[in-house]
Amino acid sequence: MNLVLMRTTPEPDRLVAIAARRCYSNRSAEDIDEKLSDAEVERLLDFLRQRNHLSPFEHADFSFSVDGISRALSHQLVRHRIASYSQESQRYVNYMKVETLPFITPPKIANDDKALQIYNQALEHTLKAYREMVEAGVAPEDARYVFPNAIETKFVFTMNARSLFNFFEQRCCLKAQWEIRALAMAMLAEVRKVAPNIFKNAGAPCRYLQNPYCRENDPKCPMYKTMRENQNEPDKNRGTEENNL
Ligand SMILES: Cc1cc2nc3c(=O)[nH]c(=O)nc-3n(C[C@H](O)[C@H](O)[C@H](O)COP(=O)(O)OP(=O)(O)OC[C@H]3O[C@@H](n4cnc5c(N)ncnc54)[C@H](O)[C@@H]3O)c2cc1C
Image (tube, rainbow, N blue to C red; front, side, top):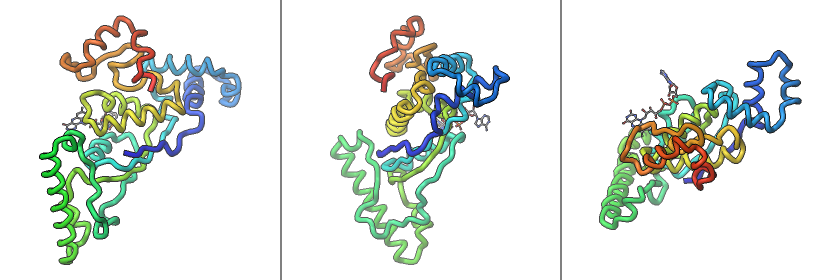
C-alpha cells in the first residue's frame, strides 16, 4: 500500500478555530485571525471536540492518493459517503499486456504455503479467462466481471476532518478488517503531521484521550479491559505509542 497525503486546506487547525470563533464573535474574520494565538487555537479545538460541536471541522479538507490496495478494501472505503472519490477504471484500463494480474494477498494467506498456492492458481486462471474472452471479442468492460476482490486498485479521495473522525473511529478499531485498518492508521499518521490539534483525539474511540469508549461494546476485544481502566484515568492513554503516531 502506498498512501500519500497530496493536498490539504492551508493551516487546517487555524481555519477550524477561526470558523468556531466566528460563531461567538461579532469581529471581522481578519481580526479574529490576527488576534488568535496558537494556544487559543488548541484550546478552542479541544472545546469543540468535547462539546461535540463538529461542523467547524468540515472546513478542513484532506486529499489522499493511494495505490496497492484491493477492491475488497475499496468497496469498504466508498461506503463512507461523506467524501469524494476518483478510482482507476477497469473499463478504461485493460489487462491484456500485464504479466500477472496486479493483486493483493492477505497476510494470513501469504504465510500459508498451501493456501497461497491455491490463491495464486485462482488468480492466474482469472487472468487467462479475461484474456481469452477479450481475444474472442468480448469488451474489456464485460470481461472484467471475472476479476476477484483481490485485484489491485488506485484512488484519489478527499474527506473533511469531521468525516475523518467518523472514518477513524470505525476503521482504526480492531474490528475493522486488516487492510482498511492499515489504511486508516496510515491516514491518521499523515493528517496528524499537518493538523496535530484537530486529530489529537482521533482514532479508535477506545484510545481517546478524553472519554474513551468501545463503539462495538465488545468485552472480548483485547483493548476492552484497558479502555475500561482508562475511562476513569484519561491521562493513562496519553503518550502511548499508538496515540502518538
Ligand atoms: C467493523 C465494520 C463492519 C461492517 N460490516 C458491514 C456489513 O456487514 N454490511 C454492510 O453493509 N456494511 C458494513 N459496514 C459498513 C457500515 O455499515 C457503514 O456503511 C460504513 O462504515 C460507513 O459509515 P457511515 O455511514 O457512518 O459513513 P458516511 O457514509 O461517511 O456517513 C457519515 C455520517 O453521516 C450521516 N449520514 C450519512 N448518510 C446518511 C443518510 N442517508 N441518512 C442519515 N444519516 C446519514 C451518519 O451520521 C453517518 O454516520 C461495516 C463497517 C465496519 C466499521
